[in-house]
Length: 232
Ligand code: CDP
Image 1 (tube, rainbow, N blue to C red):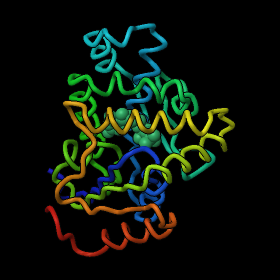
Image 2: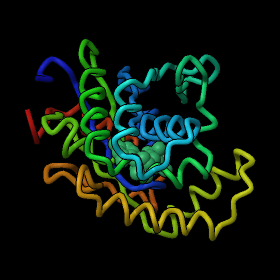
Image 3: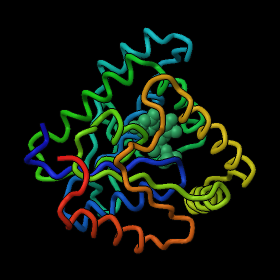
């Protein structure tokens, strides 16, 4: 299905460096960057704005089917993307802790995930190359991807990174709130019945705990430029 396209699948938990690294890898390779977490976040925002209760899974699935969502390159910063929901730029809003804490309710709904997976597969059609990051990319969305990576780091390092990132955005979150969020999300991401966070068997594991961003990027770009060892 993707034999003409170079697809790099990058999965891993929050704070593993996935987003930063994926954007820069895409830039280096001249590939399109696709942030699937942004899609689940935007859907969560829409559900909250419509005052739909998270227990109304059928209604949430309907919203997911109709969602008008675009991921566009940023106008000012090549390292970021704009997330456009119903014509409105929600890029900053979807990163707030309130959204982060609620994504799990929409991300566990089987019908929502089915729709998202289809949408994500459609997105790469016609592209010369794509770097897609998330939780289930190497396992469910693009199991035939030529290149798969699973990024991880120690829990403390991940908390520290996420804390610094939120602080830089002037989010008034505390260190222990970030630790609680990550602990909870690790658990819900890894234990949900559909599309759980899991390393694909043929993914390359990269422990980023003591690696610089550049070192991680070099590892991935180096592997992509070599002939693939896994997959087709
Ligand atoms: O940036 P961070 O790793 O904190 O989160 P994200 O990648 O933006 O994803 C936010 C949440 O969306 C995750 O905690 C997952 O629960 C969910 N998600 C998912 O279920 N499947 C994906 N492919 C991507 C994200």
